[in-house]
Image (cartoon, rainbow, N blue to C red; front, side):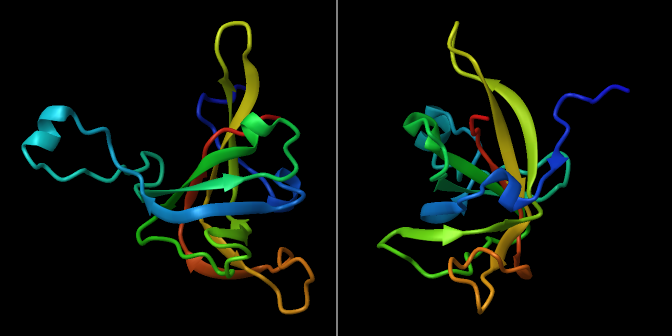
Length: 157
């Protein structure tokens, strides 16, 4: 059996991020590269569209507290959704909020340069999960929140 390049493996959020994730900042549109000429001509930036799903891409920076390598702990998550996903949790500190993703998939890839390459993953999700009412850490909720999607950037294994 052959697994095609770019295959997205479904994965449970708790298996990928046992200590959860912290979103830093806000969710914003993931736009295509715009050349200097395009910017000078006043052309608007176009939002990327996922080839597999046809959904628009949104991105957010997240931090994984369980990652031992500080340089790899923060990365971008790209959400795939027709509308901008909205986090279901409140800020723990200004600009930082604990989050849980639903519909999470992982795509393996190689990251790094030269002899310093390592196994990493591209994570995508379909939205944010709402925290359950009785949970202490707010991460065990299984209720679907905003319909959205997500792709996150690399995380070391």
